[in-house]
Length: 371
Image (cartoon, rainbow, N blue to C red; front, side, top):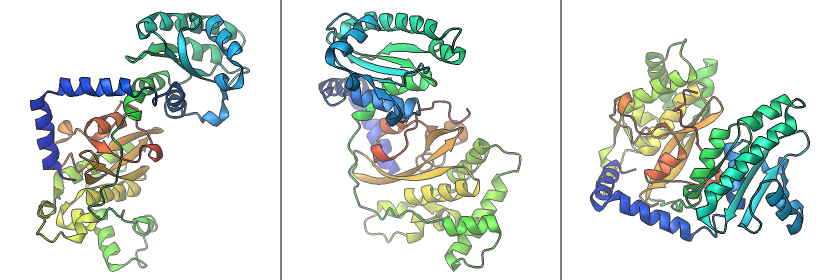
């Protein structure tokens, strides 16, 4: 919400020493590994990285007894007996090569040896499918194993390997995020644009309220000035995001406890007509323009500054991938200087955004929406 405060906080972090703070955070994550379990990490990789429901898979470490599991890990994966303390293994079985495993080692310094063993398992596993199931063999061929700095190792035999690997490395930060506790300082009600969007698509605005009709007229002017028929969804998004960041300014009355904040700063009318708004106004304006552009979008009502200030932004879905976009914090910036356009959830976490992590899509793609 309060962008100036964010800038000051960021400068303070630089002055105090970001490296020291990051080291402290790493130590805190290490101290919380009993909560950041292989089970949680593996489930996150499967659901978010691989895009597969865990309900569709066999959980091998739950399906067999300890002796059978130990034999599988030593004989198949090639890890030394007793070298791990906990694990989670998801498989599809049958003629499917799909397999995601996360193992926590007793001695983190031996992680590279474990990765080498898992890499050899991948090579051997490819031979099981070569000539019989060529598509599955190719999936195995493209797979990999990796280690984290916290002493865990993981196996990714799946499609979207790079995304799965990214989820593995990011999972520690994800599970250690600053808790979201809605501050409740501002009215963060999300403007319902359904009637306006329906009128835009049908060309019939007769049933709209006076305010919604005005919003439709203003939004239509913006859309027609920024978007052309030959634009891709990404180009439409960028053009409309650019209109907001160029033409809308933060309502400074929000900083003044004695000022009366214009209620329209919290809905699209303020940004579209008055060219000013607060974060929920920016986010709902972008939401409306994305709905008009037929780009899948949601408004995230969250917080900032360690959950002490209300904040809102958006997520868009392009090429079946989710991306975060915060037009409020890119206010006044040229496109080449946008810091919050089509970024990852990790980026948002690292720039002091908090939200309902369990019920909001995770943005992991790093291509900025270009596919």
